[in-house]
Image (spheres, rainbow, N blue to C red):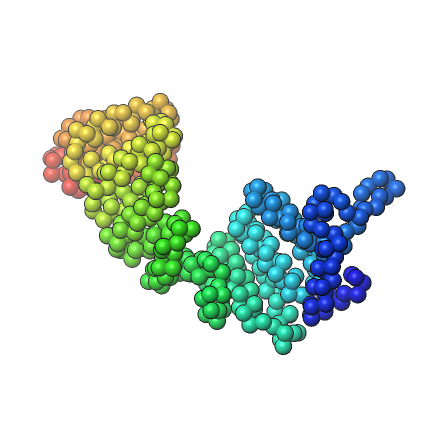
Length: 427
């Protein structure tokens, strides 16, 4: 059968009948169990004598099994073998070969996150498809062509964006967006519109086109809302909208979108999950930027509780969140609470990182700012001088942290320290 197949044969009806006949004779189940024709070399090595058509079917079944068991790299290797068989059977410039390379590209990107390999196979798929449609335009299916181009250009776009090629990524994604316009909504893959809109928003945001980015993100949100399978994507979209609004100098809107992102994450993962805690941190920091320190305290405290339970009180991430809480206490003039927390945090940082660590210096600097706000100038000077010594030791005298601490000490050294306090803004 294989000898009768011409690589450039495009009318596949007869070929499909031959494949069905072969698959009936060599069932997939029997092939997997090892019940297939074989020969042995003089050295005793087993030679698989199954026709390529059967091997293709077996490879597809093996790929599904490996994906389900999360053996993604092995799954991609099986796809590469499958593509080699397809090129041999149907020809290197056939539509099936193009689809095989596109499948490899999607697997490299979606399963393994390998952008360069995915981009290479997506480009190969597009080159083959271009030749197929050029040589056999009268046989080309417009719907199949549009679907193929959308997926291939989409993979090219997201992988180039991942590799930092924003301009090329935008061109590829716009080609995908143009191709999808010719496809009826009912004929499109389930989440293709959402993925494409999100990718276009991301590339516009990377190019500084925040207005366009928000439009694409909102389009994706509108399509994703009400779909249980899209909750994780909704959280990502709201977070992306928050970043774009922040870049547009709209802190209030940014905080609203972060809140929506947090709610979506809580609904998906639970209030005590690390993912929800990280969204709470983003919400707190967004509220601080919007001037809402009082509202920022609650989500920050909730995040600290989760981080303490997950990582422990001495973990760097937990201690950094405590620093954020201390700054809120300082800005809202809750100085007694700030001092109490500072003492606990400084002790924890010394135990975790050492008394001469940068982490301890950060707390000494913060302690100095709180003592200065209390009017306890001697205590403030002591903490700031300690911080400055550590910063100079680790970074040198020109580091921004060292220079900032010097300015704070210089303000304390003036004749009237009380009137000197407004000359700098510590936090």
